[in-house]
Amino acid sequence: MDIKNTTADYFVIKALEDGVHVIGLTRGSDTKFHHSEKLDQGEIMIAQFTEHTSAIKVRGKALIQTSHGEIENE
Image (tube, rainbow, N blue to C red; front, side, top):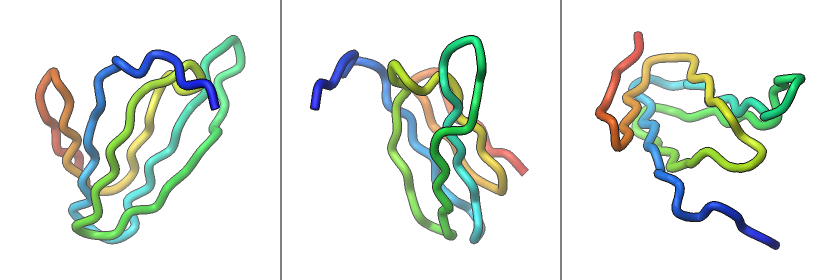
């Protein structure tokens, strides 16, 4: 497995309720969903953007922490 850009910042998503969906979106001219995870309350996901992932969509109440700060969605 060839891992590129391993110096990219990580971000943390902590579920504040059951059923939080974390959806990865692809890079390129056609943005598509390529990965989905479901987190329950208290679960934490540590992730980073890659050559394949350009965006993350979070559905549900969660705390997102990045090197730029943190945000809680409702």
